[in-house]
Length: 153
Image (cartoon, rainbow, N blue to C red; front, side):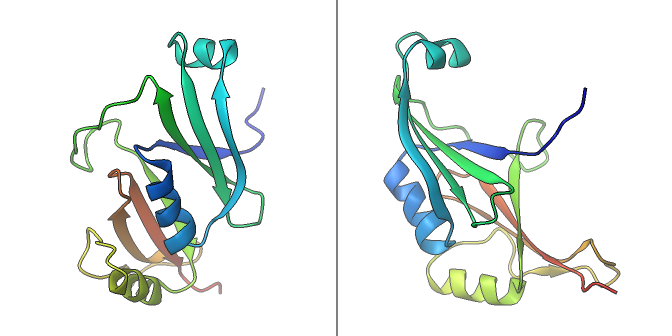
């Protein structure tokens, strides 16, 4: 028995159009699948009778890992309470980027609010550890971590 691949990370969202504007429009991710899921299979998977959800998978084109956005259409979900980052069960998506300072500057200029004042630098970082890190939250409060990896030796 072995885990063969880390396939995707999933986030529930309140408004798919708003989330796609963020993930596709601002972050540049590409939609790889977009469909409405309903019926017996979803009812069994979610444990919710007569359920219906809009699912969108996004990626960066490499096919290695996907972000799954789920908007529950029936029954609609309720907004989660904002919880501190150190609470058990709080999750985040880590995205490796090429230039943390540029990402921070460009996204900040477009109105995205980060949870750090600037990318945090780890001076002692050695490849393949993150050298610069910053966090933000998407429109629904899901946490996104941007990591600029230390240069390879």
